[in-house]
Length: 269
Image (cartoon, rainbow, N blue to C red; front, top):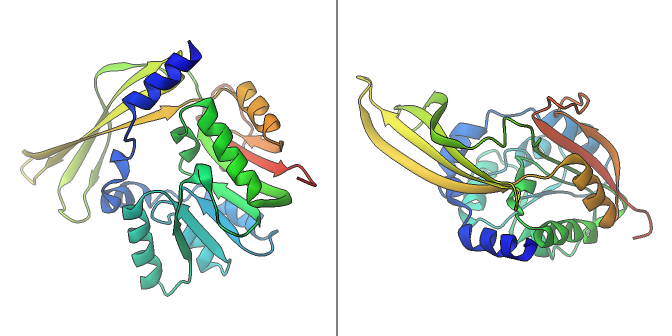
């Protein structure tokens, strides 16, 4: 059954990057999120040498560290997101190495004391095999006792409820068109594969409130439960130093919305 579920997930999510095919839209909706930056800066201050941001996207969390003087490398598989990141860092006069690679098969020719991935990127790895490949890839590029930090959504009841009808999420103004954007979501959770299949509907309205455009994107995300995550990390040679319920280092509880892991690679590996 597990193999069939994995194959089903792979088939249904052969292309899982629609949410990232418009980097300007992604920035408009996500760039203001800075909740993870203080914790990353805290650990960066304890680090020597290069820092690696994997699944870096347009550099939302890479650029703030570089602006504080840290040597940061951003890695992502999506060319369009990296092109946007390069333009942003060039405009700021920042020297950042942007590298296009699959995070499950990193070959960066360096090791670091600190690697992180944010934006719930861990959920993009949809099978046990893909999660193992990601963690093995991170481990190969960490020095002994190196730190790996990542976040993922907490699999609470609210997250795992399927919505058969469009559910309103938020409204914002699109930077380029100046149109009002109403965002709606549909979701379907498969408890066997632990994958949530999501459709995001963006409805663009003019000043008169008339809908002038609609855009739909799909994305699939894997949920991992806390004890499952503990075993997964241990099997891949990581010790959990802390697990938080948010990026402000509050404790993980049953009502948390996310899980933030601070892990250390086993020494001597």
